[in-house]
Amino acid sequence: MLRDASLVAIAGIGMVMIILLGEIDLSVGSTQAVAGIIAVAVLNQFESVTLALVAALAAGALVGLCNGLLVTKAGINSLIATLGMMAILRGAAMVSTQAVSIQGKVEGFVEVGTGHLGPIPIPVLVTFVLLGLFYYVLHHTILGRYIYAIGGNIQAARLAGLAVDRTRVLVFVLGGVLAALSAFILASRLNSGQPNAGLGFELQVIAAVILGGISLTGGVGTLGGAFIGILILTVLSNGLVLLNVSSFYHDIARGAVIILAVYLDTRRKQGLLRRLLAPPT
Image (tube, rainbow, N blue to C red; front, side):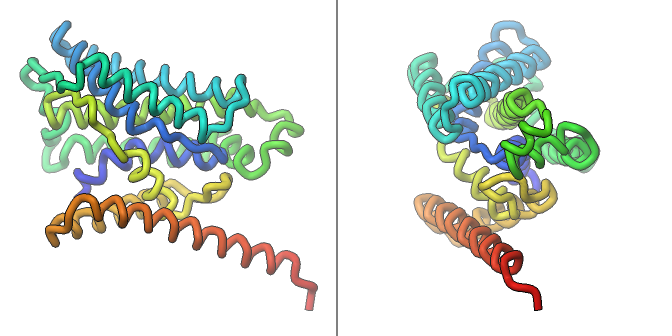
């Protein structure tokens, strides 16, 4: 189960930080496709797994940088900016490959996605290392404090002199890098770059982190809670597979989870607001 959850968890770490800022990123699925294709193309060209990883991460960073600049410099709402980026990247993936997968030709590439370090699958190990690293970042560094402050009240953060736009761009870049890392692991597992990889992946990631208590309005939630949400959604998906339920119903279930999670978050905030406004007794 943890191996299944690892791809969502890795990309989900980036999504947690983006949503904590009060933003959204719909391009993670298309980033997964493009970064995977680039990774395999570089792998076949230079026969180096390391160069393939660097190329994939660089592609993800570039996508995140573009998203961040569209939001901060062009002033475009992140929902619209990343929706447009999602379409651009998906089209680029299809055009560059003629909608045909690229097969990996270097022996050992598949070990990244399917191998073990001792008894622990490599993707699971990577996931827990990143969870520990970014838990520390969010709770014990200036960047983490900035993220929560900006998501809680962006105008107050500006007045307090925080580097609001720089932080937002950096978080989008980190989100792109983490999405690309999940793409690299997926490409390794499949030993190919797939132009249709990541279809619906963005909804899966968003549903999982919202289910884990990350507020869509920003500033509220924890990485640990998001990981629990990812595990719950993974159990749900695996259960539907074991019950031989059609994959089409998986999307229905994920959509229902998103609606339910947002509804519960809204009710929680309304209850908190009522308690704050209630006259003292």
